[in-house]
Amino acid sequence: MIIDTDPGVDDAFAISLAALSEEVDLLGVTTVFGNVPLEATTLNARRLLALCGRDDVPVAAGAARPLVHAPLRRASHVHGADGLSGRSAALPEPGRALEPGGAVSLLVSLLEAAGEPVTIAPIGPLTNIALLLAAHPEVREKIARIVIMGGGLAGGNSTGAAEFNIWSDPEAARRVLVEEPVPCVLVPMDLTYRCAVDTAWLAKLAASGPIGAALEALTPDYSSHYRKALGWDGIVLHDAVAVAEAIRPGILKTETYPVEVECSLGPARGATLVDRRRQGLRAEAEGDIAQGHIEVAVDTDLDGLRSFVLDRLAR
Ligand code: BDR
Ligand code: CA
Image (cartoon, rainbow, N blue to C red):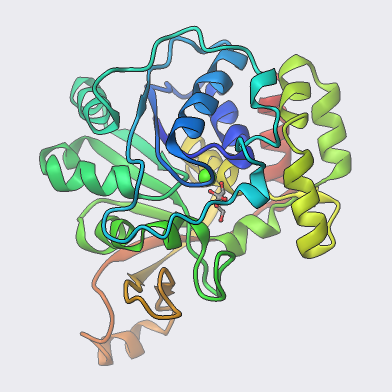
């Protein structure tokens, strides 16, 4: 498995979840702009791997900007100026140098060297993955699934229409979800919000050991965002929900639908249009909506998912 990420507090939980799960071989981590600028997301990813004792995992930096338009609105109001609630510097320093060739180069070499198809889990803007598929279509056959945290069935969190990861680079998202024949699972915010964890879950994490305590210490800015925005005492682990599915296929219930991504510059830019009409109605309207058939995560055993994540992070 390879994670493409923009840490980000929930990315921190997701990276740690994969790094601490023995049944997956975490081959590499690539970074992208997103919650905070690329330099910060890259340093955060390397520090998180050091926290988990995983300096064996190579990290390469990828895109600093979206493919076409560059709104560059960050989410530092959600994750803190450094992406980790101002606590990035409290993590251990990376024990391994950054890979020199960049994200696409690392992705290609890991995929080519892999003995079996690899799952890629993009949990930030899809720029690196779009660049990979455009420049190296031959690696598609080495990809088992692309499990993406992104999109919304009923609106967004960046705008009324668009979820942050898709909104940050809609052209890249369209390339991956609509134009490239690669099996994709989309884990939208509708489901990730339902998997939110409360302060009791966070307290158990903090008490579980040094890694759990360090992860819980990254949450103050993030949880105060949810308190202000939604009146909740707890946090949403968006990216960890997608990575759980990448680790344990089937932990999320999926349904297959055509998906389109709105790339106009209008108010719906970055919206994911998931066509949930009955099959017959879709057939009648053929040509109405894009061809892509994407597995969309729609449900899970919420408490089972929360326990799965807590159990791994407590290791
Ligand atoms: C997504 O946006 C980012 O802020 C999070 O890290 C997550 O990947 C949720 O919409
Ligand atoms: Ca993210």
